[in-house]
Amino acid sequence: MIDLTELGGEGGKRLTRAFVLHPELKNKPGPREPEDALAEAMALAHALPGLDVRGGQVVRLPRAHPGQLFGKGKLEELRQALEADEIELVLIDGPVSPVQQRNLEKAWNVKLLDRTGLILEIFADRAATREGVLQVELAALSYQRTRLVRAWTHLERQRGGLGFVGGPGETQIEADRRAIDEQMTRLRRQLDKVAKTRELHRAARRKVPYPVVALVGYTNAGKSTLFNRLTGANVMAKDMLFATLDPTMRAVRLPTGKNVILSDTVGFISDLPTLLVAAFRATLEEVLEADLILHVRDIAHPSTEVQATDVAEVLASLGVDDDTPRIDLWNKADQLDDATRLQVDRQAERAEGVFVGSALTGAGLDALFGAITAQLDDARHHDTVTLTHADGRLRAWLYEQGVVEAETQGDAESVLHVHWSDRQQARFRALRHRD
Image (cartoon, rainbow, N blue to C red):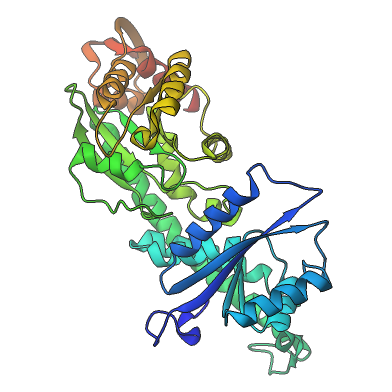
């Protein structure tokens, strides 16, 4: 993590002067318009306390220079601009290799963060629970480990020793890498304990016959605003990327009278670092347990289609089954002009499971709640299930679900008369197959 106080950030006399650069390669254009990508990068920068973001610029490049990312002419042009505005921190919206980072910092006499480093800084600032802090620390160490290779000259020194800490001829980089690996091992052990506790909580929730609705979506799409409207909770909801980080779950009664457990997850973002997905997997796996996924989408954002694709890719990487029911809320419709709103309404009418509304004003949410209720209130049917006395776990699950109407016990097996939904029947078969 970068120390902003050294540069005059929070805790210092002034904020750190920062500037955002979005490299756009001519031979490898991104899915977004360069200006939209820059705007998102600047929003990320504004989300980090202690920064005075002086501006941003799209830098179009014919190709990425392996040593300094930018060519000599552009490098000097940017140096003069940064020096004139007394910039102390440069944020590059994209990947930067350790060698490029070292060379750019030396050429411009500034601190430098790439996109992954910036998102890590924001996560470190937002993490509030013990689990969140551990996850961010693990992701940060994974990131730092990749930056050790030839990133700083002091790591090339060799150190001696008596064989206890570092043997003769061991380089500083090897010692640092070993120290990081040891710390990562300790963090993974702690996270394993937290994951077991989370699984116990999931098991407890399974005993409550309430279906789980997971809110997912791009960061700043309005998930927390919808969560607060439904639950009366006071989850932080600001017009800011990654305003909330730690997941929140609440039992809530929808206006239709349906009881559900609502789960608000961390927001997704384009190019979400894989090491962050790995570190937050235990948290994001709440989505895997959901009976229904509610995708909250900022329909007023110029890159709303690309954001929806990014969310789908993250869900796929988590292993979310395509068979899991999904409903889309095209949120922030109150920010659309009349002509655009009419076009969006027509588009939503042609799509299945799509509703247009506003979590802020409440407009259009009644139809959404009705669809959620209809989706979760599966038609039930009567059936019989035969279990051996060794199937105690399956029998307990049926009783936990409250679907057993009668049971007839024999010498070797029991026959249970159940009244269940297709969804519960599918879950039972999956459990039986797993056993």
